[in-house]
Length: 302
Image (cartoon, rainbow, N blue to C red; front, side, top):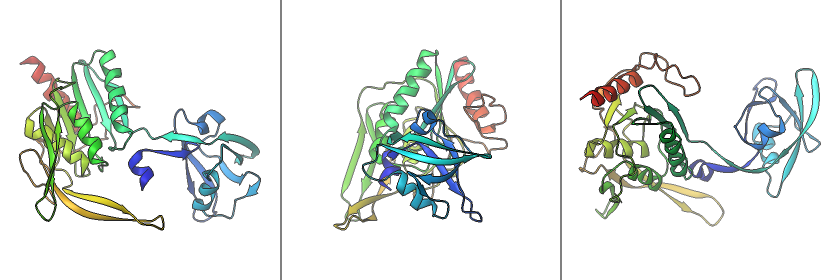
């Protein structure tokens, strides 16, 4: 759980899966720029041994635990690739999960997808925005579709880049005690903005969307969000476990309670085609993205 919220972990940077019938553990993918990719590990490789120990009858969690054991600086993986067997030494180090993806589209419109709001996200958003600015971005689409949320402080830091000075979100506990999160007077990106949302945009992504809507600094396009307007707190226990409890509700700057209601888009558009993939620059099938682009182009013509 802590790794999910920090967006980083110690490992080799590969995703494994186990065949439920054969018990074979295969590499699904290697993250770009990680030790797994650098060592030459490939999708489809079958893991046969870890540091000389046969793991072919072990469960996936046990094998992953051996690769990520405390104190390891490298691990030797025995793999099978097709009919060939080989050993590959892989460094064990910090892996940072990429939570953003950017693409420059036509008409100087930048596209930024934020998959979740983890501790690493603020710096990644800033890097993506710098990259888009270097390419001449004048307008921006932020894609929060499928974003399940993340860390409240992180989404507030990201929202602060796009909002004027004022309240971003506030929380109230069962006793009515209120805690506020605000943006400063510096608005780093004051450009035409559209934000894509859908029924899987939840929690922290709804904080962002709600603030954008209340301040009218951008247009929400898509379908109504999930509607998770509650806050969880994690309490560590002495045995190394923890308890996560719901401790408060949050409200948009204008005081809207979106729990189990969601945030309605300014322009409702059902998705009728394939969602845009920055790795595949063709955006024509994505009906929601196409509407966002139309809105931004129309604003530029006014």
